[in-house]
Length: 337
Ligand SMILES: [Zn+2]
Image (cartoon, rainbow, N blue to C red; front, side, top):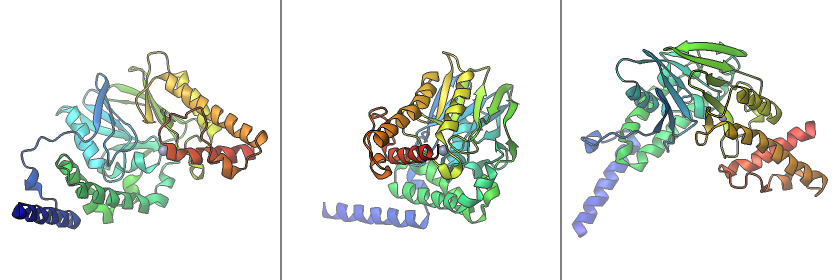
């Protein structure tokens, strides 16, 4: 018993030191079945949504596989791109090539994986690239943090992911802004056809950021909203990146225009939904503003008190840690109106 325990400690210490050095003991996992890190849900024939995948998750990704060519929408967090690509290409098989990546906006949980796709066409709004260089250090650090987190978990299922993240880490010094930027830009709209799949990219104005793009696939009756929709989650407000809730609601109204009762709606975060999810996001901002107005005008509360409120509407929403930020941003907007 004593010896076994010592042996265990020795093994654990050895594992811990190789993980720290960045040398994953690969032979340890030989013969294990490689499971997907992300959850891949086929929402229509040839269309998959990749979600989940902690640690290393991020915004929801759509893979659209057409004839010979395929498109990916959003690349998740820094360091996870190679895993995303490996799993996406496994869904495509030998005959279909991944040729396009669309980024819905510049946030790190949507473009972080971009360096793994710098050999294919990358598309985004014209205001995306200028927002990359200022966050380059953060994107690099995020890959390092993910590597430390994922390698110290010493979970056998994560071994293939560790190898993928290592690839990013090895190239980290050489990565510059261009590795995260898009190679083709749109201003208001762009209609594409990749592998016979039509995609309408639209930018309505500043909403979640100043470079939001939503993508409508008219033949499949599917829309990817990017972070214009946080489904049943408190949204991330980023006023420094041009976020404003009125423009956000306007973008969502434009999303609704292409939806009917059968449309599948892929939010930036949260479960796949339908047009009611978009309507709920519009109502969310109205409800929050109503709460703030009441707190200000009737209860005479100041900003400090208001950001601590737990409003009844959306009381069951996730990402609770974002609620004070939402209340603060909306309060500031209303002060300016
Ligand atoms: Zn975002």
